[in-house]
Each structure stands twice: as C-alpha cells, then as structure tokens.
Picture 1 (spheres, rainbow, N blue to C red):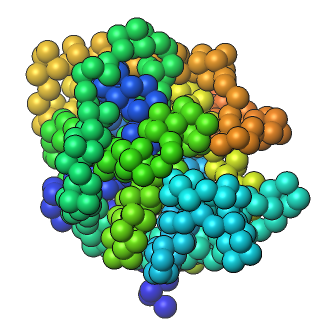
Picture 2: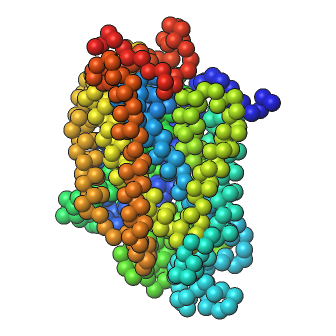
Picture 3: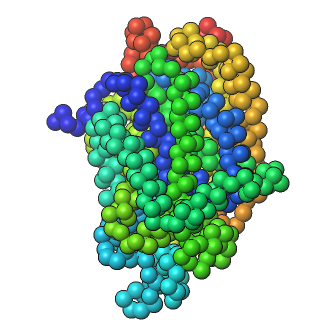
Length: 578
C-alpha cells in the first residue's frame, strides 16, 4: 500500500524559485492581513498606526525573517533540528515553535469553520444577516432594529456563534459549527495528504485567487457606493489629517504594531523555516526576504481598503458611525475578526447578492487555507524529521494529527467558544511570541554568533550581504529586536487589559487559562535544556553552547556519509570549537 507513504522518503526542493516564493507568500499573507491589520489601523487612527507598523517591519520584521529563512535553507531542516544543531541547549526552542504552530492551527481553523458556514448561508435569499426582525422565525434578533449593521452583528453573535444560549448552556456544542469545523479540516487534510510538494498546486490557486477577488470587490464596492462615500473611506484610512503625533508615542500603539508584524510573519510558528528548508541551497534569501516582507505589508494595506469601504457603508446606511464600530456602543470585539463577519457582510447585504457574497467568503477561505497548510506541515515536518520511521505511514499520521487537533478545537464550537478563540489568539500573539522571538534572536546573535552566521551564508550559500546591510541587520538583532520583544513582554504582563468581547467580559477562569497556556507553550525550552544538560554531563558545560556536527548543509553531510536522518537522540558536539 504505497499510498500510505505519501510524498516519499527524500526531502526534495521546489521545482522553481517562484514556487517556493509563492508558498511563502501564501503562508504569510492570511486572515490577519485582512481583519487584524485594519482593526489596529483604525483603532489607532489610520496613518498613526501605519508609521509604527512600517518601522517595526523595517527594523525588526525583515531582519528576523531573513535570518529565519536563511537558517532553514542552509540546513534543509525544520525548526526543531535547525536550532538543536546550533547548540544542544537550544533543543527545546524549535519544539516550542512547533507547539505554537499547533496551537495557532487549533483556533485558526475555527475561523475557517465560520467562513464555511457563511458560504453556505450566502446561498439563501435574502441573505440572512441583512434584516433584523424580532419574530419567531428570526428569534436570534434581540435589537428590534432595522439597522443592517445591528442585524449583521446579531446574526454573527446568536446564529453563527450560538451565544443566545450562553447564559444557560455556555458549553453546549453547536452542531452546525462542529460540521463546519469538520469540513474545514477535511479540506486541509486533502491539501497536505500527498505532501507539501503536491500542496503547491493548491497554493497557486489560494494565493493568486484572493488578489483577483479583492480587486473585483474593490471595483464592485466603488460601483455600488457614491464616489464621495468611497473617497471618504480612503480618507478615514490614509488621510494625513488623522495622524496624531501624541498617540505615536503611546506604547500601546507600538505593542500592537510589534505583535501584528510578529503574527503576520509567523515568527513564533516556524512555518517559514520549514518552507525555506525546501529551497535550493543557493537561493537568494536576502532578495526573497525583501519581496515577502514588502508583499505582506502591501497586502495588509490592500485588504484594508476593502474593509474600510465597508465601514464607510455602515456609516451611510446605519444609525452608527465608523467610530462606533471600534470605540462606541456598538464596537466590534477586541479579536477584530468581526471585520470580516459583521462589517463587510453589511455591504454585501446592501445589494443582497449571492454571487458577490460567495466570492467574498471564498476569498477569506483561500486566505486561511494556505496558512493552515503550512501550520500543519510545520508539525508534520518536525515529526518526520525526528522520527523517520513515521514516513512509512505518512497518510495515517496526517489523519491522526488532523483528528487530534479537530478534537482539541471542539470547545470552540460551544456558545462560549469565542472566548476560547480570543484567549488563544491574544496570548499566542503576544506573550508566547515575545518569548520565542527573544530567545531565537539571542541564540543567533550572541550564542552562535551573527558574524559567523553571515560568513556561512556568503561563502557557502553565495548570498551577498552588503556591508551597510550587515551592520543594519546586526544592530537590529542585537538591540532593536530584543528591546521590542521586552516591551511586548512587559506590556502583556503589566499592562494587561480586561478582555471584552462585545459587552461580555471574559471570565477570570479563561484569563487564568491564558497564562497557563502561555507558560505551557514555552515548556519545551527549559525542559529540553535540562535533558541536553543531562546528556552532555560528561563533556563539560561548553558542549551545551557549541554547534553540533550536524550544523552543515545537507549535501555536505551526505558526502561525509553522516546519514540522512537527524533525530533527537543523535546530537554530536563539534569538538573543534571547544
């Protein structure tokens, strides 16, 4: 039964550079670009947020991303073995990143489940979220208002999330969400069942299609709105008059910008390291990092245009203003995901168009599915790199992982599931991310040595790093990025806000679970450091902080007959550096 073995035993490379670049863009550009970025952007005053976001992308995002993909490409390894080969003491860092990828996939696919539900609802006529009527046929509506915005808000809360039963049955499973979640996981499984190389066929569609759809939707929204209203949305988004210089000095703005850059570039999940491990050895990682980081920022701005056009429509058609959506009585939840599931459907409901509604939510699904492919593949790569015998049962292993994560996601299908989604999102995008990024930057800069790292890239991978670029990267990794991560860490711990979803305050039990979850996700770092210390107890403490003999490109290891597998039990220290 050869089909059980999946893509085969060898780690191959992308067919073309464009293929590898495309799947990296698909991983980076996801749902966070569409709803998380516009939410922060308007929350802090449009251009007021763009300034710190742009600076964070330049001063932190690009340098960290470049180092990560260069590391994965140089070793042709996923994050678990890449960091373990730098020094045995770092064995747990890669596993923490894999754990974070698994954690994000738990709640990320729940958002795709909501999308699947909206796609099915889009075939109803009229669109079910367009009108709020308080009768027995539409008992989910509690406002009694004809406001399209309030109707859309109530529909998402009481129908999709099932929160109408929150007070009486907070942990009752919503059958429709369980079915949609199962469909979402089946789609992800079908995309990765034959390996990441086969998944690139899907990525050609899921990466390119959203850009086509967003341009069509922008043109459609311009056609359906008055020219003045459309320009007003651009003004709210980009007008220099909305710049508040005093707010730029607000630490919260910078913390949100830092967390957005880290979240959108996936620093804590290791997906980009996994993808880079399939690059040809001499691929220009400096060029690729520039393209991907710029594409990430440009995509965020593009999807922001689409979102803000819908927000302006809210102000025109509803008794609420755009400010109300973010800071007033009718504000969206702090998760920001309702930008896609409440705000934009209002514009779709204006014309009650099934084709445009389906098109929009297919775009949302496409944006999320390629990110999910990489998140799952990161976990699978870690398993197959360290336990090579599992490759013989590739498909059953993939099924098992999908089923386990599906079961872990089931609490999010309850009436209180939105709290769990927000819990996972907030704590994984801040506290855990700060710890992981700070750790890996310190490892590369101070433990391994950034100068040595760049020398290897230039001499062996033939990646040309100009002298000014070298000092810029070194300063970022030694000073700027650690300072940013400390700020994010301190703000998360000391400046913790009360998490509120709509008018519902998150219960303390969820907040306490958030802290437990953050600590647990970093569990592998100290635990496996102790394990490494035990294994090297007879070789001196310096052996723990020295690169291993496995820190060589794959073709060199093969030429030295060092074996093709690299498992946790086979870490040998390079004695020449002791």
